[in-house]
Length: 139
Image 1 (tube, rainbow, N blue to C red):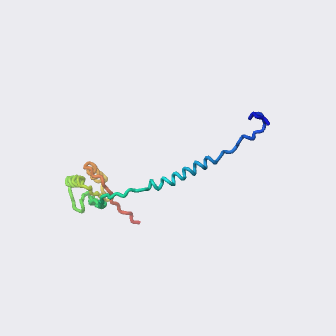
Image 2: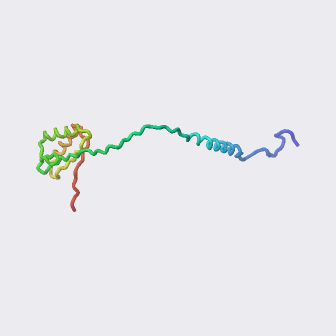
């Protein structure tokens, strides 16, 4: 029997496996810590807060229809109007809160220049809600 650890050729002390016992012990301790602290964290303090009744305001903006017929006549809500009066009405509509929706209904035979003038006037005054009215094709 040799007293020196290096005296023998046999490797009885060499271990090729990981010792899982300390890892399991640490996991069990952590589990117990979490089980104890979670009920403490969920403890709530009851406070009497004031109640406010606020309902979402469901106001729909006004819809304004600007129509252009085949001859180039411009109508504001089915009433014929001149170019200067149209610009004044668009400027007044842009100042409203909330801004109305401008629905542009142009005949397919009208020159695009008329449509572009109305769009330009709306952009210059700051009117942002513009929609194009279309008619589906009949087959």
